[in-house]
Length: 248
Image 1 (cartoon, rainbow, N blue to C red):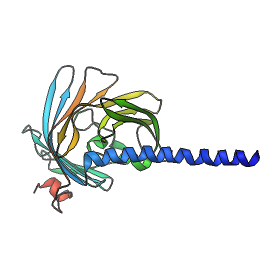
Image 2 (image 1 turned 180 degrees about the vertical axis):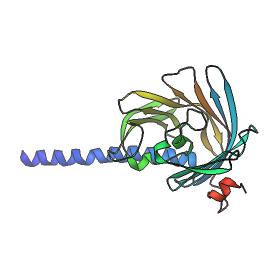
Image 3 (image 1 turned 90 degrees about the vertical axis):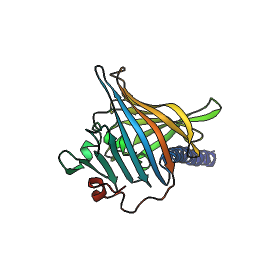
């Protein structure tokens, strides 16, 4: 009996990491899906508030897990504003003051240009893969796809804002939903895919809306007009020099 209990204990200890590994791999696949090895996209960000609405057109480039460049091209008053993420660091450039400013880690959770997306959100940061523990909460069938719901809880030592995040990922690796919960286990905001289309050979969430629970009538929507994956990018693209003086 003692040996039998030991075998059951060993099997139980092995089963949990397998599930965790499966959940982590799903998150990895979803991140790789919308970043690719490299990517270029053109997007419009629409910010809806109680008494005003404004839109910005942006270009964005990514490479690997750690390199992202976002640049505003319209309207004219915002054109040239840019954000560079490189090796876990972030910088912004504002043409009006002609300054490159490093964003400290304590401000990564701050809103990006008045939107409902944080600096970390806009960088398409992938830290969640390795800095969180992942558990598969649910597997279900939806619209002809298998859908996975994964709870991701940060490691105790991880320098993150959220108490947990909950991802809903389709079997073609499209991120359908991402919930952000605070340290008191209260849902703060949710990113949802509102439209999905085939672009550049893969299914892409072309319209995604971020909305805060406390202000249901306010939201920020990202609409992707064009995207290309796994393309050649200039070697000097993800540099502070290019952030200030665009050559791409």
